Image (cartoon, rainbow, N blue to C red; front, side, top):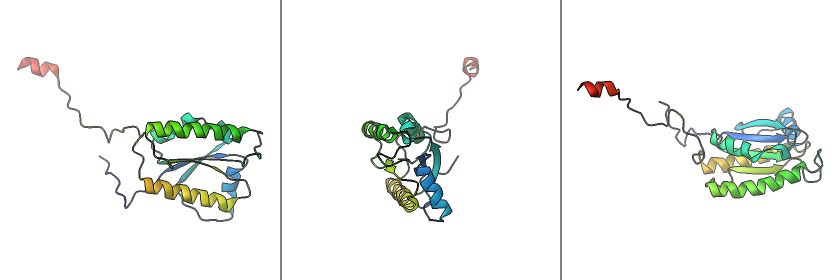
Length: 163
């Protein structure tokens, strides 16, 4: 059975949905410029932040992510004209839904990062990581694993009938 994490060795797992044109390019620039930021983020490149379905975010939390970051182009700079406006509206609705589910505020965050803002990307990742670290592990929506399940005793009915 797996040992539970203590707060001393626990590091948050953060999933980031990054817009291909701006935020992902900003992350790439941060990497090539050797700007330091926490390694806790796993990136999923999406064509546009407006294409991130809120179900993806909820499912990420269910499958073990401690935090989720969605980052796109600044308003008015979307390569698909209005994708980031759709994302902003969806995110506002999602925040209310997550609050209803009991997910702590700050576990899911949204930001705008352009392709030339490598240092801003590093700041956003650092802030999200620190916010999620303060919240602790995600236990609200996480699916139960086999390690979490109680032991089940299997009773053979034929053995009881013989007694």
